[in-house]
Image 1 (cartoon, one colour):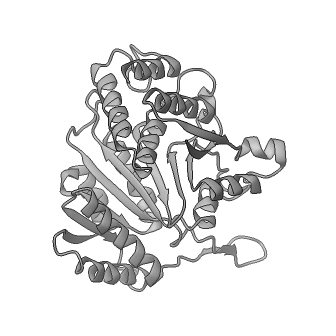
Image 2: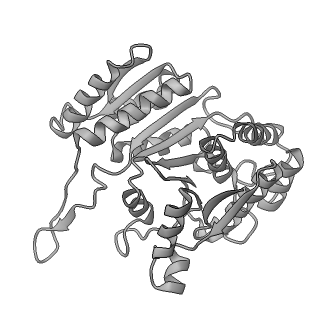
Image 3: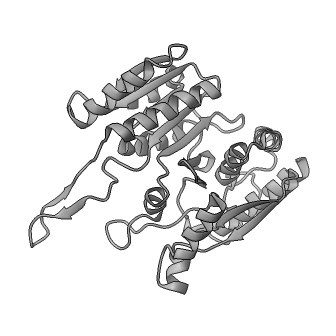
Length: 335
């Protein structure tokens, strides 16, 4: 039996992670879930948003599935997600987006992946006030050759293993000539080692425009931390929103899979949450564990349920919908 750390998370987190557990079990996969608490729940119980026992569990099991965790805006503790990425050197953030029949969007043929450097850039934690009255703040973005090389190499290896044909490096080297220039130069060097895969580079603002006007021009996007954070949400919007967007945070030894949307405390416990993103994250986790057959069946079941439109959550069809539990039960029946 496989041991996996489960962090239910805040708000709707417990509702949707329970759905993911049920779907995985219905697909015939036996997992020993080691449930640990982080976020607001952990603060209430342990006065710490990220207790040591959470880190110990992840270190021991090497794989975790995580629900959304609340991060205060502009005050309070730093992002737990960022802390986990830095603690385990989860340098690669992988965000696939794929059109789902039955979800109304402007496009119906999107299938691309954003691969984001996950530990450097402006999320390195190097920020402070530079005057005693706290009227001037400074953040320092760190880009290293080592960090750039390993994320670009990860992107090319991902493309190779998943039969992808094009890798696009996204940057701002025209203005950020040192940090952006270093990332771009390294990307070109690594690209030369993969002649079988096409390579190009685009400035971030042009990328944002082209993703909106013609996203089919992209296949695998690799970029730095801040840019990747922004455009991965943009690409999620192209296929219906964050309710359909899974994410994987991967390092050399540890992998954490998650729903990338927020904790939505206003609908917590009301049987309204869409668990699709966390179930897609579970699919990514199963593939990471080399359990390809059940992962494929779960993905196909989601596509079938949503395309038929009879049993979908409120965010998909506000006029005719079912709750989180019935959506999950129907998926399990289909599996």
